[in-house]
Each structure stands twice: as structure tokens, then as C-alpha cells.
Length: 107
Image (cartoon, rainbow, N blue to C red; front, side, top):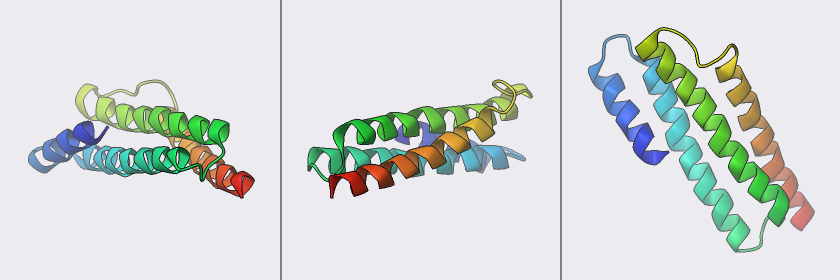
């Protein structure tokens, strides 16, 4: 995800009207860090295992849906499927809530 985020950042810097790519790049780079942090918290036992693992997978799927939809719109002119970006955004929110719940359950 980090490499894809950097590639989209470069494409947005060199493309005309590529604001979608910049947004997709930001989402990928931010959520790559969130996945690493969630994994580190799981390894240290600070998150409930099952919930934390589901949240990490949710981050991956959500960021892929969101960034994939924006990238496809930029290059192909159509979306991945109707409401792919909002679905990815909603899944990101739910994943963040799952991390919060996993931390609270572990305490």
C-alpha cells in the first residue's frame, strides 16, 4: 500500500487535474501506517486479537476500495462499482471503531 501511495503521489504531481490521485495517495499512505500500528499493537498484546485482526483486514480492504475507485475514475473515466469510494470510506470508519473497541476490550 505504501508503494502504491507513493506511485499515485508521483502520478498526481505530474498529471493534469489529478486531484483524485492525490486523495487516493493520501488514503493509501495513511492507512498503510494504520495497518502497521495495528499490527504492532496486536503483537504487543495491547489489542484484542480477533477484533484487531478484523480491523487490520478492514483497513486493507477499505483503502483498496477507496483508492482503487478514485484511480479508476481518473484513468478509465468510470468507477469500480457504484458507491465503491463511499463503501471504502464507511469501512475505514468501522475499522477505526473496531481498533477502539479492541483496545477497550483488552484493558
